[in-house]
Image (cartoon, rainbow, N blue to C red; front, side):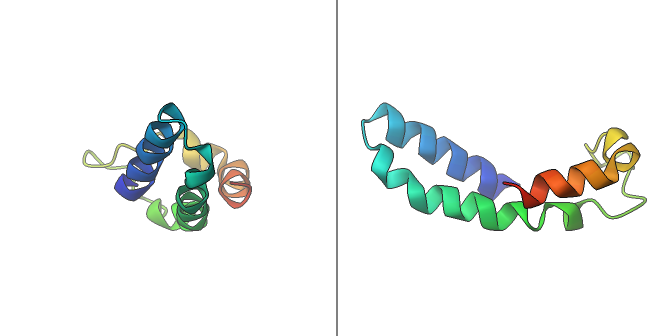
Length: 70
């Protein structure tokens, strides 16, 4: 997830600098990471250490579909 945040920050910086053409590599990286997102939230990972919200498991089909559509 930190990698996704870093790529998003890089996208924003490139756009602000007038280089929207340069974001393709970041967008591709985010898309690849998105496919792995459901695996980051295994069933039962709702613990004190987790920042996952209960809605993930309440709407699991929608959550996984959204990850595939990124």
